[in-house]
Length: 111
Length: 114
Image (cartoon, rainbow over all chains, first blue to last red; front, side, top):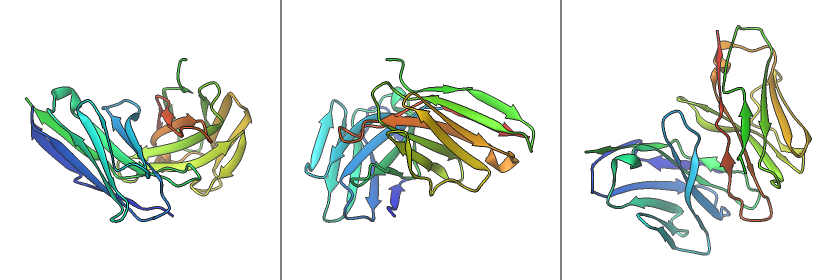
């Protein structure tokens, strides 16, 4: 099955700086890569996703890049704000829609 | 749409008791997933249904766990008998298979087995 590894496990950044989270996956047939944000005590919420036919996608301050050859994808958050503090999960799936999640990255934005 | 609705939000029970978690997926979604989240193991897929049919239950820990989806708008996850190691947050999620695949989670059920 698919194995998704996520790094780092924790990330502390100064407000206004950028944050980058990286994930690797094992199944070369995976073609869908979403990112979820989970605030303390809340549900995971989809913040951005990318498909294998695209190398980069941007939505305001967040962007995701995908390198299919290397089997890795990354989340970039620019101009971080205190409300960006949360746990972020990457995930990957193939055509069968079964998402495999990374272990999560706890992001803390320091004011 | 109210999103994926789960009940109860919190459940505290004693070891050996039966626990039933409930989920109502988003209307029109044809796939439903049950996940378990713990600090140690992260988000684990327990079972997934497509058009009310269980497709993959390989993540169900053991025979004490069972899940049903009698119709398109309701699913249950049952643990009988419950054990302390079952304590976790259980999330239900739904999506539209064959379309954009975006997965939407419910608010979860925080289960504590004493």
